[in-house]
Image 1 (cartoon, rainbow, N blue to C red):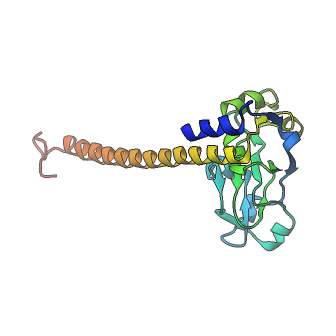
Image 2: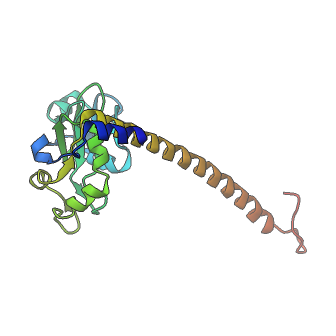
Image 3: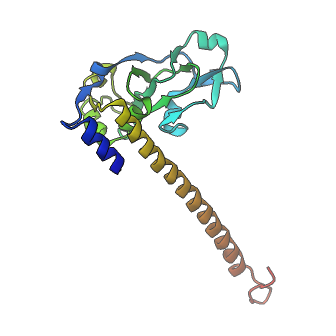
Length: 219
């Protein structure tokens, strides 16, 4: 963090400018692939639902594919684009994004916006998870059961635009925190599983009786 402060003092002594998404990039809509089109190989595909369930801040490979024919009829995200889910059942998840860092373009489903800019795509993706962004987006959410945000509204939302060097340093720091969080979750899950096994062992011991009422200690 001290390095980032030094960089900000050197590269942004007068502060960091804020610009709207409409000023710094362009949006296009995804469209084409559906779940019924998924297969185990072919052209990589990102479905909007997977942005909530499968992907993190950035990705360089997909877990589903579509045929060349389906891909040909689909909209694509290019390396460096950010794929944003513009539909959700709740406000918290709405407008999460994944920075596409793969080598090839990917087919992108409906209910997405594809954002292209000169910003570091992972920086943009992290920003879409920030409280600063959340406060702004809530002004533009529409719908009742299904919540949506439009490209028109997105263009009005502001994002801090430091130098590319600072963006990359922020991504580096946040990636380290993300990795640490994943490691801690894995450790906690392992500990939880051990506790579950311990609980099951004692549960079965305490609820297993020999005829006559004594606890069965042979288990």
